[in-house]
Each structure stands twice: as C-alpha cells, then as structure tokens.
Amino acid sequence: MPGAKTVRVPRHVAIVMDGNGRWAKARHRPRSFGHNAGRKAVREVVEACLREGVRVLTLFAFSSENWHRPEDEVGALMSLFLRALDKEVDELHGHGVRLRFIGDLAAFDEPLRQRMRAAMTHTAGNDALHMNVAVSYGGRWDIVQATRQAAAAVARGELRAEEIDEARLGQWMSLAELPSLDLFIRTGGERRISNFLLWQVAYAELYFTDTLWPDFDQACLREAIEDYARRERRYGRTSAQVITVP
Ligand code: IPE
Ligand code: IPE
Ligand code: MG
Image 1 (tube, helix red, strand yellow):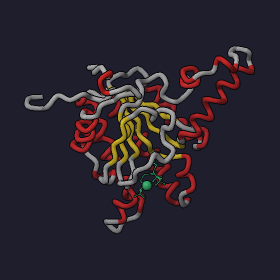
Image 2: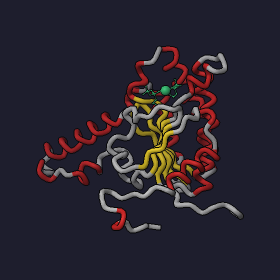
Image 3: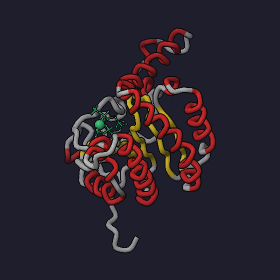
C-alpha cells in the first residue's frame, strides 16, 4: 500500500466484542439492536485482518456466563447467530476464511449446532484467515475440558500422570493447532478478561479501548496493531536478551 507504514503484525488477534448494549441504550433502542449493529464491526475486522495479514482472528461472541442474561436477550442472540450463519458464511468463504466455533457447542439446540458444523465443514479448506468464534465459551470450561481429555488418556493407559506437562495439556486446549495468541483486544471500556482465553492469554499483549463494539472499524484495528508493534515482548527475559523476530 503506497505510503502505508509497515508494522509488525500480530499473527493471532482475539477480541472481546463488548459494548453493544450501551451502544443501543445511547440510541434509546433495545439491546438486541446493538447486537445486530455489531455484525458490521465483525465484517470490518475480518476485512482489516485480511488486508493487514493477520492469520488468526478469535472473537468472543457469547460467554458461558451470558446464558444468565434475560431469556429474551439470549433468544435474540440465538436468532442473530442463526441469521448471521445463513447470511455471512458464503461471503466469508468467498474471502478464503476458515471458520471454527469453539466452546461448549452441546449447549446449543440442534438447528444451530447443525449450521455451525456445516459452516466449519464448508470452509475447512480455506487458509486466508482462520476465524474462530467463541460461543458458550469460558476459559475455565476450556481448561476443564482439556483436563478431562488428559484424565481419559491416563485412564486408557496411553499416558502417565507424571507425563502431563504444560505442552501436553496445552495440546488439548482450544486453538492449540493455531499460532499462539499475540494481541488480546477488549472494546467497550471494561478492563477485564471476563473468562475469555485464560490459558492462551498467558503472554498475549493486552489492549483496551473505550470504543463500543458497533463503532469498532478497520481504523480502530489498525490503531491496536500499531500499539502492539510498539510493545517489547520479553517472556520473562531482560530487554537486552530479547531478539527481535521479524
Ligand atoms: C457484548 O455486548 C455482547 C455480548 C456479551 C453478547 P454487551 O451486551 O455486553 O454490551 P454492554 O456491555 O451491556 O454494553
Ligand atoms: C464478555 O462481555 C463476553 C462477550 C463479549 C461475549 P460481558 O459483557 O458478558 O462481560 P462482563 O459481564 O461485563 O464481565
Ligand atoms: Mg458487556
């Protein structure tokens, strides 16, 4: 791109898409109006990731705890997911996006699960951008499901308990097959993780913005990436030891 600054681009970006309710409230509209408006921001970040060369995008769409919201809001979110799956998957596929859903998918009803499976299968051969949507996802749930798999392997006699180490357990965590998380973004002004990728966030760079999710656009992602590029990732070492990996 002529004139564009070249920056160190994170390979894997995760976003807590927060602030839809407040965005709607400011417009005297129901919360579901804000969730709907958030779809445009998703399209914006997908386009920006494709353009900037981000390889993996993981979006927090619905947490384990969000099931406790009022029934009508949960219902509105479920029908939004259904509509989005029907409408957006072909376009994402056209852009070469591989779609995955992570989380306790068994918590959803069959029509929704069936569409999620179909979208994953349909886009499985794509490689331009790996897009993961976390639904009914919790970081603690993830650690528990990985631990269960480890316990099952021990019970089958395939593994000894002493052989379970960080690398081994990490293989069962969601997203283990993808590059590790570089940049964790949260919109909407709160400075917390809210049970998102607890294991995976260990050495990610954190970026918080007051921008409400429906207002987040390509320029906002660019700003986050530029901020990331200025960070020094030391992984416990000293500044003098750090070797810059291009
Ligand atoms: C995030 O926006 C979307 C979901 C949690 C599904 P919120 O609905 O949490 O919006 P605020 O935080 O109330 O503004
Ligand atoms: C986190 O947002 C979950 C998603 C964005 C999907 P919340 O709005 O649910 O988080 P809390 O309740 O403010 O921590
Ligand atoms: Mg919120």
